[in-house]
Image (cartoon, rainbow, N blue to C red; front, side, top):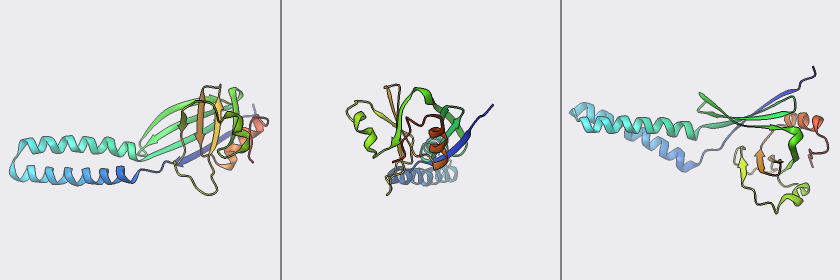
Length: 166
């Protein structure tokens, strides 16, 4: 069987305010925990444990990567949190995809009036030149990706009338 496999990993850019909050919670946790251990203050120790748990979950949500997999006419998107947890977000069949084009492409002009909230699985940074791509899936979903050239080429080989590289 002729299967094509392409994998692409994109790191999501973290909001600087969340990054600052993460380090602030680390410092507060250590300070309150150390203070409560030295003074035998039980409530402070419980607060430090709560802040530590909060810091763990904040760390999971600030260090995010997206992995795009293309395997035999299917695009799969996974979210990797803090390089330790993986969650499958979505899976898309290329044959049900309407269009796959760069985000600033003139081919997307017919789709601009659709009132669909985009699902952004890119790095979240608008670079010059913009390497993000958009695809519309079954008229119900608008997905923004930041794929590699090999990924775009693999999708193009399956659906050349739907994929544009402008």
